[in-house]
Length: 111
Length: 111
Image 1 (tube, each protein chain N blue to C red):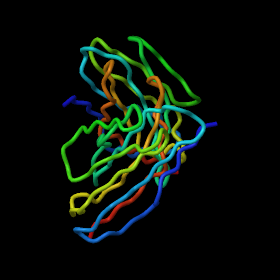
Image 2 (image 1 turned 90 degrees about the vertical axis):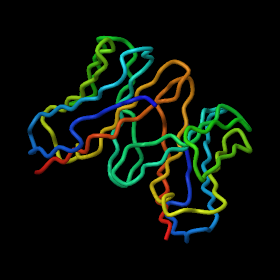
Image 3 (image 1 turned 45 degrees about the vertical axis):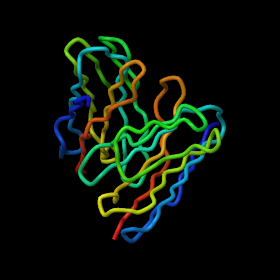
Protein backbone atom coordinates (compact mmCIF):
# COMPACT_ATOMS: atom_id res chain seq x y z
CA UNK A 1 0.00 0.00 0.00
CA UNK A 2 1.49 3.33 -1.07
CA UNK A 3 1.51 6.15 1.43
CA UNK A 4 0.30 9.45 -0.03
CA UNK A 5 -0.12 12.11 2.62
CA UNK A 6 -1.66 15.55 2.30
CA UNK A 7 -1.35 18.33 4.81
CA UNK A 8 -3.04 20.09 6.32
CA UNK A 9 -6.31 18.15 6.37
CA UNK A 10 -8.26 21.39 6.43
CA UNK A 11 -7.49 25.04 6.12
CA UNK A 12 -9.50 28.22 6.75
CA UNK A 13 -8.26 31.41 5.13
CA UNK A 14 -9.62 34.90 4.50
CA UNK A 15 -10.44 36.13 1.04
CA UNK A 16 -7.31 37.58 -0.50
CA UNK A 17 -4.89 35.42 1.48
CA UNK A 18 -2.42 33.28 -0.39
CA UNK A 19 -2.09 29.71 0.75
CA UNK A 20 -0.32 26.47 0.00
CA UNK A 21 -0.55 22.84 0.93
CA UNK A 22 1.53 19.73 0.55
CA UNK A 23 1.34 16.29 -0.98
CA UNK A 24 3.97 13.74 0.08
CA UNK A 25 4.52 10.51 -1.79
CA UNK A 26 7.11 7.74 -2.15
CA UNK A 27 10.22 8.98 -3.94
CA UNK A 28 10.95 5.70 -5.75
CA UNK A 29 9.63 4.63 -9.18
CA UNK A 30 7.81 7.91 -9.77
CA UNK A 31 5.62 8.20 -12.88
CA UNK A 32 3.10 11.00 -12.37
CA UNK A 33 1.52 13.27 -9.79
CA UNK A 34 -2.01 14.57 -10.31
CA UNK A 35 -3.85 17.40 -8.56
CA UNK A 36 -7.65 17.56 -8.52
CA UNK A 37 -10.14 20.08 -7.18
CA UNK A 38 -13.33 18.67 -5.70
CA UNK A 39 -16.09 21.17 -5.05
CA UNK A 40 -19.09 20.24 -2.95
CA UNK A 41 -21.89 18.59 -4.98
CA UNK A 42 -19.63 18.26 -8.01
CA UNK A 43 -17.20 15.65 -9.28
CA UNK A 44 -13.42 16.04 -8.94
CA UNK A 45 -11.79 17.97 -11.77
CA UNK A 46 -8.18 17.67 -12.83
CA UNK A 47 -5.97 20.69 -12.20
CA UNK A 48 -2.54 19.42 -13.14
CA UNK A 49 -0.69 16.31 -14.25
CA UNK A 50 3.01 16.53 -13.46
CA UNK A 51 5.58 14.05 -14.64
CA UNK A 52 9.05 15.62 -14.43
CA UNK A 53 11.12 16.53 -11.41
CA UNK A 54 11.15 20.30 -11.09
CA UNK A 55 7.89 20.68 -13.03
CA UNK A 56 5.95 23.84 -12.32
CA UNK A 57 2.40 24.19 -13.60
CA UNK A 58 0.10 27.19 -13.44
CA UNK A 59 -3.58 27.76 -14.11
CA UNK A 60 -4.77 31.25 -13.25
CA UNK A 61 -4.09 31.88 -9.56
CA UNK A 62 -3.26 28.24 -8.86
CA UNK A 63 0.18 26.76 -9.35
CA UNK A 64 1.99 23.58 -8.39
CA UNK A 65 5.56 22.41 -8.04
CA UNK A 66 7.01 18.92 -8.02
CA UNK A 67 10.06 17.38 -6.35
CA UNK A 68 10.21 13.69 -7.23
CA UNK A 69 13.58 13.08 -5.55
CA UNK A 70 12.32 14.03 -2.13
CA UNK A 71 8.73 13.00 -2.80
CA UNK A 72 6.60 16.10 -2.43
CA UNK A 73 4.45 18.51 -4.40
CA UNK A 74 3.12 21.90 -3.33
CA UNK A 75 -0.10 23.50 -4.50
CA UNK A 76 -0.27 27.29 -4.21
CA UNK A 77 -3.30 29.54 -4.44
CA UNK A 78 -2.61 33.25 -4.78
CA UNK A 79 -5.23 35.68 -3.50
CA UNK A 80 -7.79 33.08 -2.42
CA UNK A 81 -11.40 33.68 -3.39
CA UNK A 82 -14.55 32.08 -1.90
CA UNK A 83 -14.99 30.10 -5.10
CA UNK A 84 -11.66 28.39 -4.39
CA UNK A 85 -13.31 26.63 -1.46
CA UNK A 86 -13.05 22.93 -2.23
CA UNK A 87 -11.17 19.78 -1.34
CA UNK A 88 -7.86 19.50 -3.17
CA UNK A 89 -6.70 15.96 -3.87
CA UNK A 90 -3.34 14.75 -5.03
CA UNK A 91 -2.78 11.33 -6.59
CA UNK A 92 0.52 9.54 -7.08
CA UNK A 93 1.20 7.05 -9.83
CA UNK A 94 3.93 4.57 -10.63
CA UNK A 95 4.36 3.18 -14.13
CA UNK A 96 1.93 0.33 -14.65
CA UNK A 97 0.19 1.01 -11.38
CA UNK A 98 -3.03 2.74 -10.56
CA UNK A 99 -3.14 6.16 -8.97
CA UNK A 100 -3.13 6.33 -5.18
CA UNK A 101 -4.97 9.31 -3.75
CA UNK A 102 -4.11 11.28 -0.67
CA UNK A 103 -6.76 12.14 1.91
CA UNK A 104 -7.21 15.64 0.54
CA UNK A 105 -6.93 19.16 1.93
CA UNK A 106 -10.24 20.88 2.55
CA UNK A 107 -9.90 24.60 1.89
CA UNK A 108 -12.49 27.11 3.11
CA UNK A 109 -12.14 30.73 2.04
CA UNK A 110 -14.12 33.25 4.07
CA UNK A 111 -15.39 36.40 2.35
CA UNK B 1 -16.46 15.31 -26.69
CA UNK B 2 -16.37 12.63 -24.04
CA UNK B 3 -18.96 12.40 -21.30
CA UNK B 4 -19.46 10.09 -18.37
CA UNK B 5 -22.81 9.24 -16.85
CA UNK B 6 -23.28 7.67 -13.45
CA UNK B 7 -26.53 6.76 -11.76
CA UNK B 8 -28.36 6.91 -9.48
CA UNK B 9 -27.24 10.10 -7.75
CA UNK B 10 -28.48 8.97 -4.35
CA UNK B 11 -29.57 5.64 -2.97
CA UNK B 12 -30.84 4.44 0.39
CA UNK B 13 -30.81 0.68 0.79
CA UNK B 14 -31.41 -1.64 3.75
CA UNK B 15 -28.70 -3.95 5.02
CA UNK B 16 -28.73 -7.22 3.12
CA UNK B 17 -30.25 -5.81 -0.04
CA UNK B 18 -28.50 -5.99 -3.43
CA UNK B 19 -26.78 -3.08 -5.16
CA UNK B 20 -26.23 -2.09 -8.75
CA UNK B 21 -24.57 1.18 -9.76
CA UNK B 22 -24.02 1.88 -13.40
CA UNK B 23 -21.56 4.04 -15.28
CA UNK B 24 -21.32 4.68 -19.00
CA UNK B 25 -18.84 6.67 -21.04
CA UNK B 26 -19.56 8.28 -24.39
CA UNK B 27 -17.30 9.72 -27.04
CA UNK B 28 -14.34 7.42 -26.63
CA UNK B 29 -13.47 3.77 -27.08
CA UNK B 30 -11.53 1.32 -24.94
CA UNK B 31 -11.20 3.63 -21.93
CA UNK B 32 -9.71 2.51 -18.64
CA UNK B 33 -12.56 2.54 -16.14
CA UNK B 34 -12.47 2.91 -12.38
CA UNK B 35 -14.71 2.71 -9.33
CA UNK B 36 -13.66 4.76 -6.30
CA UNK B 37 -15.25 5.18 -2.92
CA UNK B 38 -14.93 7.99 -0.43
CA UNK B 39 -15.84 6.82 3.03
CA UNK B 40 -16.77 9.50 5.56
CA UNK B 41 -13.78 11.68 6.45
CA UNK B 42 -11.37 9.81 4.18
CA UNK B 43 -9.82 10.19 0.74
CA UNK B 44 -10.64 8.32 -2.43
CA UNK B 45 -10.10 4.58 -2.28
CA UNK B 46 -9.77 2.63 -5.53
CA UNK B 47 -12.16 -0.32 -5.55
CA UNK B 48 -11.94 -1.72 -9.07
CA UNK B 49 -10.41 -0.89 -12.40
CA UNK B 50 -10.82 -2.31 -15.87
CA UNK B 51 -8.63 -2.03 -18.95
CA UNK B 52 -11.05 -3.84 -21.26
CA UNK B 53 -14.29 -5.77 -21.61
CA UNK B 54 -14.51 -8.52 -19.02
CA UNK B 55 -11.20 -7.50 -17.43
CA UNK B 56 -11.64 -6.47 -13.81
CA UNK B 57 -8.99 -5.93 -11.18
CA UNK B 58 -9.87 -5.52 -7.54
CA UNK B 59 -7.73 -3.39 -5.27
CA UNK B 60 -9.39 -4.13 -1.97
CA UNK B 61 -11.12 -7.35 -0.92
CA UNK B 62 -14.65 -6.51 0.06
CA UNK B 63 -18.34 -7.11 -0.28
CA UNK B 64 -18.51 -5.59 -3.74
CA UNK B 65 -17.93 -6.77 -7.31
CA UNK B 66 -17.62 -5.07 -10.67
CA UNK B 67 -18.36 -6.03 -14.23
CA UNK B 68 -17.70 -4.56 -17.65
CA UNK B 69 -20.17 -6.15 -20.04
CA UNK B 70 -19.54 -3.60 -22.78
CA UNK B 71 -16.59 -1.41 -23.73
CA UNK B 72 -18.02 1.75 -22.18
CA UNK B 73 -20.15 0.32 -19.40
CA UNK B 74 -18.94 -0.35 -15.87
CA UNK B 75 -21.19 -1.76 -13.16
CA UNK B 76 -20.62 -1.95 -9.42
CA UNK B 77 -22.64 -4.59 -7.59
CA UNK B 78 -23.23 -6.26 -4.30
CA UNK B 79 -25.39 -9.25 -3.42
CA UNK B 80 -25.89 -8.18 0.20
CA UNK B 81 -25.06 -4.68 1.40
CA UNK B 82 -23.37 -4.03 4.73
CA UNK B 83 -23.58 -0.87 6.83
CA UNK B 84 -19.90 -0.29 6.07
CA UNK B 85 -20.71 -0.04 2.35
CA UNK B 86 -22.19 3.41 2.93
CA UNK B 87 -20.24 6.14 1.20
CA UNK B 88 -19.81 8.18 -1.91
CA UNK B 89 -19.03 6.17 -5.04
CA UNK B 90 -17.36 7.67 -8.06
CA UNK B 91 -16.86 6.21 -11.51
CA UNK B 92 -14.01 7.55 -13.62
CA UNK B 93 -12.32 6.99 -16.96
CA UNK B 94 -9.01 7.82 -18.58
CA UNK B 95 -6.81 6.79 -21.47
CA UNK B 96 -3.06 6.53 -21.56
CA UNK B 97 -2.30 8.03 -18.15
CA UNK B 98 -4.34 11.16 -18.87
CA UNK B 99 -6.15 12.82 -15.96
CA UNK B 100 -9.10 10.95 -14.56
CA UNK B 101 -12.54 12.15 -15.62
CA UNK B 102 -15.11 11.53 -12.93
CA UNK B 103 -18.84 11.00 -12.96
CA UNK B 104 -21.08 12.95 -10.61
CA UNK B 105 -21.07 10.20 -8.02
CA UNK B 106 -23.61 8.17 -6.08
CA UNK B 107 -24.32 8.79 -2.41
CA UNK B 108 -25.15 5.38 -0.93
CA UNK B 109 -26.65 5.10 2.52
CA UNK B 110 -27.13 1.63 3.92
CA UNK B 111 -29.63 1.58 6.78
